[in-house]
Length: 251
Image 1 (cartoon, rainbow, N blue to C red):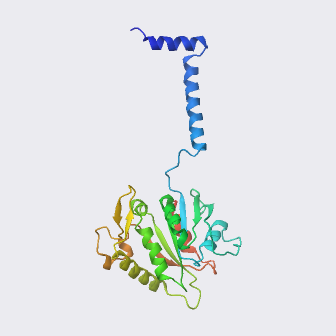
Image 2 (cartoon, rainbow, N blue to C red):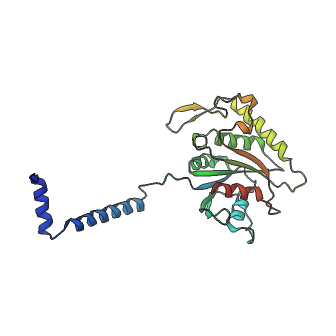
Image 3 (cartoon, helix red, strand yellow):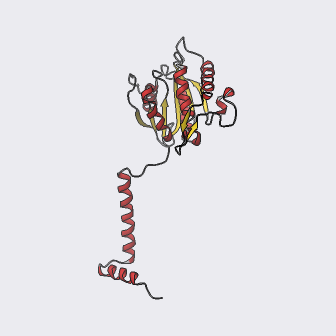
């Protein structure tokens, strides 16, 4: 068979520059690698891999203190904290093995809540922290409802742990009472028929049950993602359930 004119001209050009077929392939490969590097460096490609553990909850629940306790470990003293005005982020390795994850402490102020919701699509797990002595059920219920109804949470079945902090205080509510009050709040919100945009921009009704039951009978076992409720005490450095939750995320 005769070579096409284009192929012949191309071959003549390579010969004129002394470029062999093998060298040409290497040059093309090198150019592809350089192009990929430039795209990544410029931020043109964003990894779709979820790599974050989010710490969320009402203001004053101890989120920033928990963030530093997890990042610094038990052997180092965590600094004194104040109400965060911006997210705190650091890398964190749950347990002695497994990949490192990004730990993100998100402010609890209502004005920053929409930005916090935007981060849930990057999450592998969510730590929802509450103050057992001042649960703020209305505020906590709204935030929890928003997250459990988020399409990213439902589609990826992102696990939640509701950690009831300050259980060492004399006026702390029992974990069972906190769970009961939260469930009642979520049931009431499910009946309000609020709406949200799904991943394709369609307006849909916020719901927790998705046809698997009725809102007035909702329990955490019916949640679109795994939810567990535990008690912790940052003051006593008792955060074992949270550590176990994080370790399970990388297994």
